[in-house]
Image 1 (cartoon, rainbow, N blue to C red):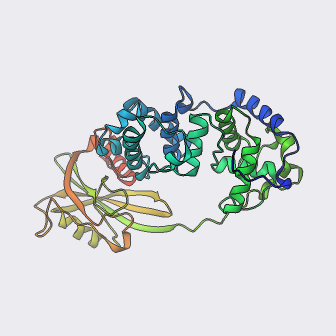
Image 2 (cartoon, rainbow, N blue to C red):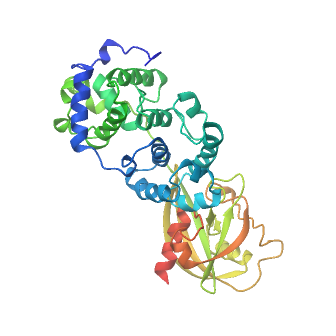
Image 3 (tube, rainbow, N blue to C red):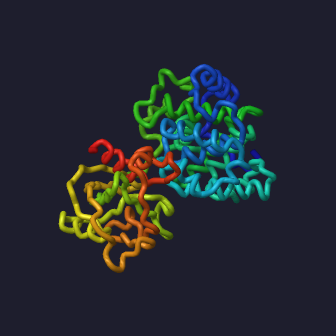
Length: 385
């Protein structure tokens, strides 16, 4: 690629780039994964899949991808959608800013690019939610242009092939990996080559206990020859998770449950959830229920949920509505802010909303976008009925 730095000598694999690519592509042709976005591939489907795969496993993203492209088969279909319906379809996939950015980007593509996914790095990077990796994946896999697509799997494979020992998060190491990936890429076949690297990293060249015996390019791997596979690539220690104790109040009335919408300036804005409180005692939970005009009936159980580096333990209480909410607590503007649980609790919720428990249990299929914790709570409530 023009302007790409030349890899250092120590990063050169034992066999020629052409031989390595040929072996890898032959393996990919018989062992590559059958993934939904690889069927009838086009730049739009590649873009949707890559956004979904950010912070999400292949197994989880697959069913969401199928539903999404059935509902929005083209960029113009997506651009014409409303945010609420996008969030409802995305419900449970997490990291909802991805869905909002996709909608914004689709509208920009329609307005500025006549509904076609751009074929150049600058235009792609100008779209909301499209970073260097995602742009490289769209260009190479969607348009078959010679750009590296360096996700975690590909970084690991390339680093081991070239015995590149630095941390891929460092700019200097990333440049070295990118240069070697560009050198190895066969002319005219960037799409299959990058997907083959991804599959090799996911299936064979795994972070721990890689299956070097089954690797189609093992004879090209400097790290294997130098017995350094286990320490390449270098990794940073992960931060310890923060544990947060919460209580959820499920206010029931005539077979329905009350939900509140997360407000502006909060994580997962626009999604719906059960009222939450950072409660250390049942008395605090009773006071929270009273604010909603309800009294506690029983403790239903507990759910656990992870948001980024926070691990939430949520004790779920069932409550019956018995009167109007407390004075000063408007049903159109309900504050459920708690400083100790700001990550999990919105600073404002508007309005209060009653939904049937069946719709809640379906996790948004009825048009309501729920937080992941709310989906778990609704399943717990349904099982306890």
